[in-house]
Image (tube, rainbow, N blue to C red; front, side, top):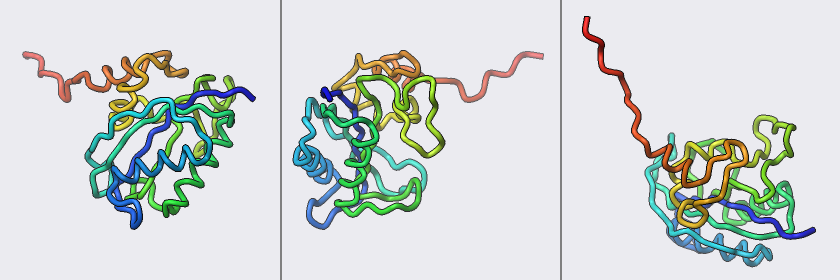
Length: 176
């Protein structure tokens, strides 16, 4: 099978005994991907972001573009194995985690292939939360601003701009 490209989001908000602080966990995760024969094409700067939900601690986040012959389910299995090797255990959805690796985009478009829809909790590419996550869009904009979301047709840059755009909380009251 020929190589395809993926955009992967990387996050950490818990120190690792061997690798250190979250930013160093991200660097070690990149090494783990290389060790698994996944070719790294581009790496974003690491940013630090406030926690979402009950995660408690701030996160270090980055994005990476990789090339691999693996299909989406095989790449997901590899990413989950890497997370486990860093001590990640299944648990609270928004809890603290030493490493989080998510497939956000795929050069072949959608998974599962259109018109099939992923069942809840199953692999879906583009990632269902892509357009709502600044901690993914900021790093991804740095390395793949023109990559288009196969669901909306918008580029990463456009998704990021929409997210940044201010929206009124409460409209001004109308005069009576």
